[in-house]
Length: 335
Ligand code: AHG
Ligand code: MN
Ligand code: MN
Image (cartoon, rainbow, N blue to C red; front, side):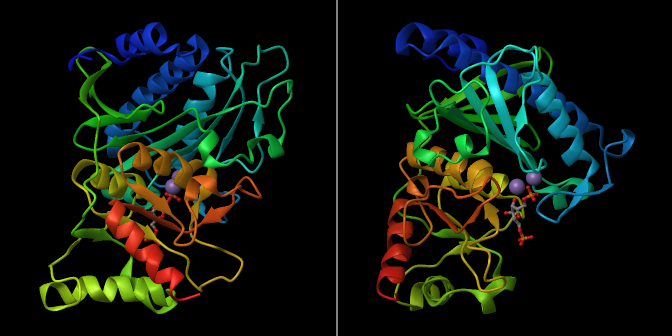
């Protein structure tokens, strides 16, 4: 593969060499178009009517930002008439979105977090879009919520965009991880890196330490040992970063290593974690595994967990393989 080829050329290549289905390529092309439009909206900042609250609350009980709603809408509009997907589900919609009657339904289910890191929107910091494609179960023409409750291992494709200094699109079709950058002059995503790889060992971690008092002992132990640095049991110093947007934090992990944690905590006994499994944890977990890293709840591989509900939450510990395995070992020794 050659650096500098466009996303469309890459998808064409995948169809010829790896039998990528034209419809799945179509879903990705539609998503890329939606991302370009969201990237434009984001770039307007205070000059567009895109900042601030939407004066609505989503199913998570979170106040929606205007951009959460706009981005959700942009993605729906780009997929509902192309015949590639049968239904969609999003953080911002309580129920699944079945394509309108009369529209051709494809073989895929699309799930997405239209805007991740919403609290960063109004302060001009990094935000992103996370998405993933699941197979629509065979013979199902009118998918329902249970059809979306598939383990992350079933994902056929996963990716995200980060709207940073540049808009980047990071993608896996299950054969490694590729990174594209949006060339705004021509409106094309251009391949800039393939085979993204996370080093097994890490010395950078990301976690919201304000939740310290709610963490389980294995997570406290791991972070305490990071804090102890070279003088502690790990015998090396660690660095800490927290962007407040999983997509941006995980982009750093995929770009230069380390671990990201949003672990189980005791704040709300009903919640196994803060992040949502189907459209936040699973897509990034697939990308991380495809880049040679590991993605765990602390007690199981994220991709093996079968979600019980559409907006199911899950504990997330992912990145450098050795660090994730160590945190899992701490969980094992502390039932
Ligand atoms: P979203 O903006 O889609 O609701 O997701 C926000 C998530 C995630 O992106 C981030 O890592 C985490 O919330 C930050 O949570 P805290 O504010 O608890 O640190
Ligand atoms: Mn999110
Ligand atoms: Mn979101």
